[in-house]
Each structure stands twice: as C-alpha cells, then as structure tokens.
Length: 538
Image 1 (cartoon, rainbow, N blue to C red):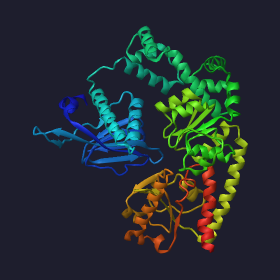
Image 2 (cartoon, rainbow, N blue to C red):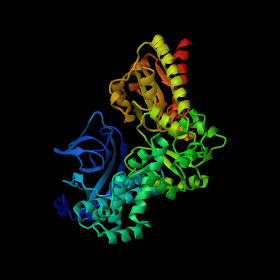
Image 3 (cartoon, helix red, strand yellow):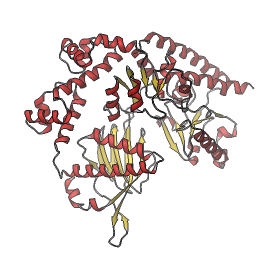
C-alpha cells in the first residue's frame, strides 16, 4: 500500500470536496458511483469486491472506492451490517487556473490504527453535514479533509505515531480488552515504550496511572452488568476483569463511594432517570414512569405532555442541561455495542450510563429497562397483556380481511422510504400477521426509494406513515405536500392498493405510533383496529 501512496506524492495538491454522507444498515444503498467513496465498516461479516479485488469484511474496516469502480458487497445472511459511505470529489489543478477531476487508483483497503477516533470523526462529519446551517456544512468538509490527511499519512506509514497516538492505542486496548488480564508491561509494549517511561507519559496525558485508568474502565463496565443482570458479585467481577469479588468490592467502593449492593439499591429505586432517546422514554411510560429528565419535542408528542420531566434538549441531549439536571442514571441507545463514542464517555462523567444496542428487539429493550428500575414483574404482565390484545386483533383482521400483503410507506418532506422488519414492521408483520411484499424481507430498518420503484413492492394494502418527522409544523406541511405530489403521480395510480382503495393514512401524529417501543406499539394496535376494522365497518 505504501508503494501506491509513494506514487501519488501530489495528494496534498488535490482538492477534496465532500458530497454526501450516508449511514447504512443494509447492503449498498443508493450512492453516486461517479464519485470517490470512503466506506467505513463498523460491523459486517462477509466480503467486499472492488474492481475484482476481494477482501474479507468484519468490524473496523475502511475501503476507498474510486469512481466507476465495480463494487459488490456480500453480507452473510445471519449477520448485522453497519457502515458509512462518504462520497467526495477529487480535483487536480490543470496548470491553467482550472481544476479537473482525477481518480485515486489502487487504494482499496486502508489501514486505520485508531479506529474509534476515526469513527468518531465520521459521526461528527455526518452530524454537521446534515445541518441546514452552511457554516456547519463547511466545517464538515474541513473535518473530512483532516480525516483524509490522517488516513493517507497513516496508511503510507510516513510518520511514526507520536506520544498521544501511542497513548491512544493503549486506551483503545484497555477499553476493548478490559475483561482480560492486562499488565503495565503489555501496555508499554503496545505503546513502544519502556514501562517506566510509558507510565510517566500516560499520567502526563491522561492524568492518572495506566492501572488506575484500567480500574475505572472496569468499574464503569461493572455498573452496567450489576444493573442489567442478577449475577453474583463473583460473576460480575470476573466478567469485567477482576480476580475475585472481594477485591472488586473494595475497588468499587473506592471509586464510587458505595458498595456494589448499595449502588444497585440506590439506582434501582431512584426516580432520577434521564432518557436520551424517545425509544427508551416510551418503555418508561409503559411501566408507569415519567422520566426525571428527557429529550422533549413534538416528534414524539407524548413527551410534551410530561408535567414534571426536566427538558434536556429539543432534538439531541444538551450536555449542559443534562449536567444541571444531576440524574442518578442515564439511559440511551446507540447503533453499536462494541465501542463508545466521545459523547457516551461524557455522559458517564455526569451519571452512570446504560447504553442499549439499537438493533436489539424491542421486547428485550423493554425488559432491560424494567430490570434497571426494579419492575421485572410488571413488565412480564404488560407483555402478556400485549400478546393477548395482539393475538385477538390478528384473528379479527384475518376474519375480516383474509391474508393480505401490506406495504409500509414512509413519506418525508422530500424523500420516501419502505419500512422493513423493524419499528412498525415488528408489529404489523410479526404480531398481526400481515404479509411482507416481495423484497421487504431484506430491509432491516428502512430503505429510501424513488417513486417509480414503488411498483416493485406492489401490495394489497399500503399504510402511509411519516419519515424523519422532526415534529415541526413546517415538516408536517412538507410531508403533506409530499403525499399530495406522490398521489398525483400517474405511477401511483397503477398500484394495486390504490386501485382497490386500500390505502391507509397514519401521518398526523408524528412518530407517536412509529417509535420502536412498547408504549407506541400498544397504541399502534388500537390505531390498526381503527384503520382496518372500524373503517371497513362503516
């Protein structure tokens, strides 16, 4: 790889312009093949083929795909996929005051030593690039160019890691392997330093010794295990890397000021729980708990009805507001479960933080939240009642409508999508027995399409729902205009459900029914009854 980069010493003279940033949880969404694309795989299992070159896929892989390349991604059927695609222009000066496109050839698999840092930058790029503010978009392109500098120089091995990079490598190792036996000598070897010099350097950078930091990582991890399981202290100690439960208990109290038993009791019976995601807020509401603090907006209208909840942000958590709220526990949900973002680490500085994997089943999420707050039995009763209601409604739908296929169509301000097996699909397909149209079984969450592609998902019925509704009046108006444009399209009139007047609309309550949680799913059952049974009875 370094020979390839040696051949392209003019890299710094090129202009790099970020065009799009996409997050994908499915195989190869639509992207512009005329541009360069940087693929960051956070989780995958399978193979990728670029211009005939075959590479194994797994988490923490980065590839550079040149324009017009032959690209094929093959994911194993039982694996989860999560990656980013950053598409960008590369321009070269032509000597006459103009810039012309150029292709970076031969750079396919790229080496990234500090993947967590790299992934954090990509998330930051996406956050800023998706903003309407032009300054944020400009900042996204600046960060992207800094990312390319780091990527190309590291891959070419043109410089040795400096002290901060060496320390960062050992921090990565601790966070990924905290449950194993780790010694100072092993960490020093990873950093390429003597043990004594490494300890001094680490303390200078981090502010504490390597083993003190490792202990804090293990204690932080143990907090989640203590709250999410009923395991013995001995088992918890072994899971996070301590040799025995007595040493674990001493260290736990030294770091937290409480014994593990006291910590569990304090959190489990606390009413000061901050929810950073609507997905988790809905579970708390289903258990009869109004969050102590939460993100509040009209995208999930139930949050605006809270009387005592402290608002900590309109769209995303505001760290200052979260800190001022002083919660006893923070619950959030992220797309991955093998690494922590910088924000998650900041949350943990405010209060113990439980991070649930985004792709976990909603029932598991619900039971996990119930276990944290000491309401396991209430959750079990709730799930049994939900199952009874769903089973009765399923039979009523079958008796009234027969076996019918249903397409869940999300309409946004300027985009449309097909919803798959998650969110509404978990209820409509799994619990109520509607048949998936051909192709939907391959959609894990959602898949953006063009209106002309709807014919490929033709179904007996169509349910129109919101897509990426932010809760504002302007967005609601934009969605309604989008639906109007869609219904005026001649291609829409060709769909079977349209011709049989089997189109059902559910887009006026934002994401009240579409959020992936127990509270919304129970409300969705009643909404389905109104749309499909009561409507047909009139």
